[in-house]
Image 1 (tube, rainbow, N blue to C red):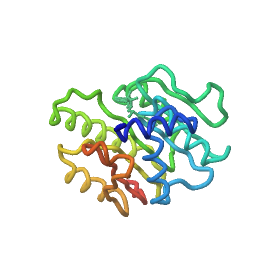
Image 2 (tube, rainbow, N blue to C red):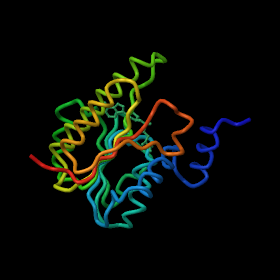
Image 3 (cartoon, rainbow, N blue to C red):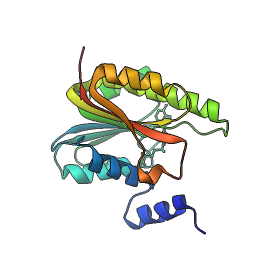
Length: 197
Ligand SMILES: C[S@@+](CC[C@H](N)C(=O)[O-])C[C@H]1O[C@@H](n2cnc3c(N)ncnc32)[C@H](O)[C@@H]1O
């Protein structure tokens, strides 16, 4: 029997997206009012490009999307109006400076994930380090009232992370899209109503 991942992967490619993660963001955007018209969006861990493509489609030519990833390039064609791709590591200061030059953002999404080692504790710890960095970027670059959706591999301090989110957003909660069900390990945390300061 085909694995659910293969099913979603084929369906994504048939619909013109390079990765099945598109279905996760679709579900998140259907469930939570994160994306307003003409929003400025930061897509962290953007390669191969499904999230960015979906965000551009939903914005219908309004707003702006900035993608950032370690990969040298992604599936969004160079020169797409309203889109900037930054190739690099979000822990690097130079990359951070480039991200910051596009701020403020109304929405930050992060699907960033470490290369998995097979050791769950290590993978979860590396994922949490990424999520912490994403929250630091959000604290500095989100506009008042803005939103954050961030992927986390469960198993390393989610309770503390949620508490940190709740101190910076009016509401914060976990959400596991149907399309993530086959990956029991991952979930998303959603913060809405960013409180600056
Ligand atoms: C699951 S993929 C993202 C899929 C993407 N959301 C899409 O829709 O096509 C996770 C991505 O996180 C990126 N990543 C991991 N660590 C990173 C870091 N420190 N800085 C930037 N990107 C990172 C990886 O290179 C990888 O492309």
